[in-house]
Each structure stands twice: as C-alpha cells, then as structure tokens.
Length: 102
Image (cartoon, rainbow, N blue to C red; front, side, top):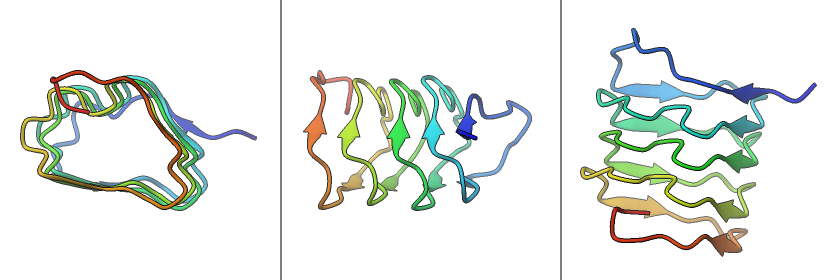
C-alpha cells in the first residue's frame, strides 16, 4: 500500500511535525499555510514531495531526506523564514523556481 500525506490538519498548532515512518509521499499543497510550523522532520521512507507542499509555512531549516531525488516546483514557495535547506547527495533535479523561494 502506498502511503501519502494529503493534508496537515489545520487544528494542529505545533511548531514541529514529524512525518510518520512508512509515509512515501507528501502531497501537493499538503502543508500549505501551516504558519505555526517551523520544523518538519522526514523519515527515510519519504521519496516524493509534491508541488507547493510547504508553501506559506514558517519553516526555518529543512533537511531533504536521502531518498528524495527531485524537489518539485514551488515546494517551499513564500517560506519567508526559511534560512537553510540541507540537500542530500542523491538529489538530481530542482525544478524551475522563481524568486518566491524554492
């Protein structure tokens, strides 16, 4: 069975979220607008992060998991608090992004 996070519940006001082990994909727009979220932790099981998945979040630092080979368009759009993204060695593609952030 393919496990995917489709959305982050709006009533969670935590600043940190750990994606459960076994999740393979973070869907497009899944965390969009989760402004209380400053830290996201990925398990190694995640292989795909959808477009605009973390748009408009207040993430400060992100470590891309080792099994991600592509960062989709606008994954972190308008994340104005984002200071650092740690890329993994297996990353092959960063899609065309504009000045709104990666």
